[in-house]
Image (tube, rainbow, N blue to C red; front, side):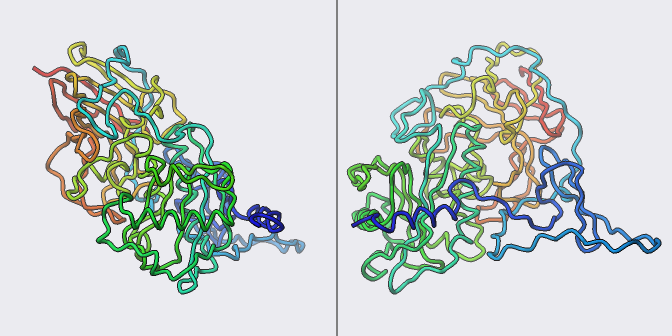
Length: 491
């Protein structure tokens, strides 16, 4: 009988595992790491670290050596206890630049637009043509809930001939945390992902080879082999796991697995998923079983960005770019690739309702005189003001401006990529098309990322840069916590 006498034990065990966001352990300060309160100090090995403000974050500075002063003997005192390291190793966070490596920023205060915005409906460029998943308005119909609180499951699955490691959470902890934080940040708090974790491996019947998906099986979830594996995995795990209230399930395979070379991912848009109902009456909206590329050592690939990439497709958003030809713009969009900036572009946020309309500036080029705008970075949800500027050029095209900053979610390049991304949206294009085209200076070198992303040029506009397109000239006047730009008409 499923979930009988073992139900209470399972619930108690799960309470020891992360169900919401994992908490940070009290580790010694490290230059560039986040801290909790400005001005506090910590001494470690003769060095004093201080919590300072860097941009919008509080981080530990690089520290300074403190030489003990000579003084008279004092009464012996019991020293304060030093927190001991956690018994379980903490996974390394995703690489981000330390404040010491950042160029010095100037002070840029937020100012309202110098010319009023126009009716927002003018800038809701409508999708032209027929596309299964869209790039333009009206807001696409989602396959599942994209706002509010949802619960995702993490379930490790193994085999008799391929057993899972004892400490799988060292691989998974950062992944589930980053997925939740990315969703919260990208949606401006409108989507909250909580987690229910199965803390023991669920053993699947048969040999691991029976579940193999080679790279040659590249038809996606339309493959009968992949659909058969999904059905077998969900049926077996349903005998043990309580799926009540679960929206999505992310399966985890043993470290170093080589059986699934081509990842399995699907959603409720496929009949084989839609028609499966768990013992609790739940229909799973989205699931994934990772491929070997997630397991490559030091590849820089992550589960969380792969999950969120496919999650956005189910919200009706068209993937950006062709499947075989990578473009530089792809590395700036999580809907283009799971690597690179890992940013959900401002237009897509606007399209799915994750960008509040009061944050969108809309203006016809013919009505621009001498417009100055302050753009708030996409990742800044604290400051009120404009994040996205849309200038409709025709029925199907618009010039779009948004402010980018390297964040904890980003892969990095030797040149830190902070600035204004200017691009043209074309609603004649949709799923698997290059429906965005960056407008940027051309004289820039190609750089490699810290992760698996394809090398690309810095497409962002920095202080002093100026571009022109469609009768509009855009110049960056200043850069700091925000970007100040001037927009004028061209002859």
